[in-house]
Length: 135
Length: 176
Image (cartoon, rainbow over all chains, first blue to last red; front, side, top):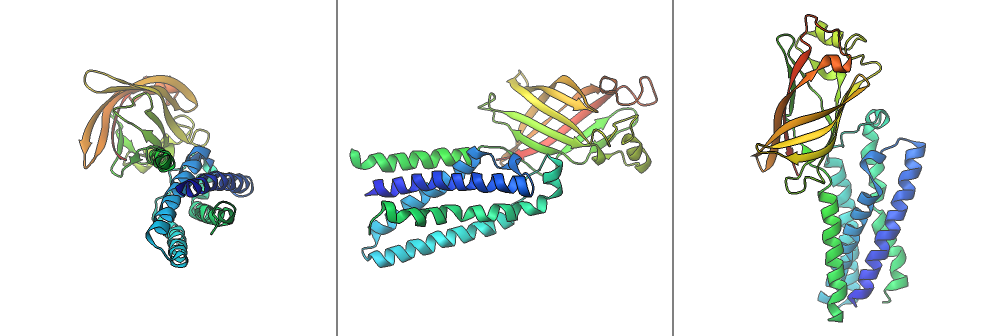
């Protein structure tokens, strides 16, 4: 049973990394290049960390709560809450020390640039879930 | 046995990704000092940017990539600070930063030698920086000093009122 959650987590990690890379490349080319602070390896590490935590929590909740509807609502609330909490973490965090002139000039855009990516694992998980985990 | 394969894989990936995220760089804490001293002048670079990744147990993976904006030179004399920006001295308009990028970090009897390239005013020179390390507030302080000949970097004219060799001292608190 955990196998399904694990694979959903793994695919979510790869898919949200792909989305992050597509988004960052487009942002860098259209607005400002923050690539010095966001390598692909780091984006993948964040996606993988989030996905593995999510798949473990999803499995644990499903095992602990017999009523599937309640278990699902609780998990969805937790996942949505964690994604929103990520916005506050980003807002409170210190900006990196940018080296390139453009990144230094537009440093105030950095937090806004990061925020959409916080929701990529959430969106990917719920998009792919019906394909991998049957109710 | 089969039942624990996927939980084990999940834990392994979790730990690996967390290690990748949290081991990328040290944080340079406030309170760092980059000082240059001579008979006259003496001053500081008030701003230092860049990344330090220093791990006493992984010197091969340790690196320093730092830059020092020329505009942050502070000799406590506004006229002299302004003069330092001119083309005769640091030529800040064309070379806004002095940089140091390490190539290796090696252990010595007393501390470490950080080998790398110092670039000032577009001139790059190999440099070995002796560095000592001490613990502080749960993190580390990297400190030390070395002599830097400004003439090697075409900063100012030789044998002038300003000594050719400046003593550079650094004190950099870092944390994970």
